[in-house]
Image 1 (tube, helix red, strand yellow):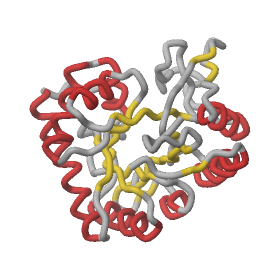
Image 2 (tube, one colour):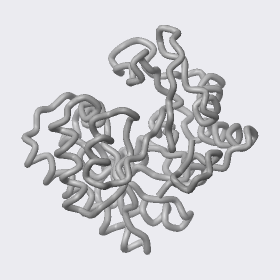
Image 3 (tube, one colour):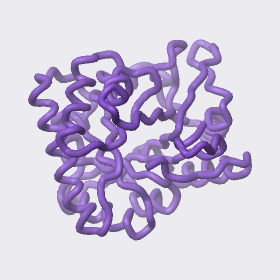
Length: 258
């Protein structure tokens, strides 16, 4: 696993942050920002609001954490996890809109949006749906030539690479995988790995090039430059600390890919 620098012993650690709205806050942003190297910040469509986006950007910039735009279908009520059919031109415009909104606050904090990662239903749809994946990439191109973070082998990363963008593969230490290397849908039992020791073990295994054991027991190769720990997982900050410590103990350097 590498970040593109030629160092196969380097891995990025990312988490979803800014997932709240108004007085409601889901993620422990400050604690996670002390651990991760990349922050996927909600841009207002599945979670987040202007004040939250500004606060998280300021905190990330102060800690030297890279800021990523976590773009989504327009679905606040469903947290961006409900299937939607959005025309490609509309989706491209909405992706660009979200990136631009976050970039205002990132630049005000002295930095800039460094990459883009879809969220929830859009992330999963872009794994298989070439048209929706192309629309996401079109939106990224409207906003600037930014790296795109996604699932290895996905239509999204293929479209990003085809457009000349840096297509960055990521893996999930706290999600179950199918034998095909895709994520087990959240509606199915066991989709989220909740045992901390198992999450840590899986993180080190993936980062060391050993892949991951799928839900049916198959060993699945997962080549990824970034590891994600979900910010809405109970005890996410403490879990992220354990993952980072375990990666270091395994001889891996944790650093941002962007």
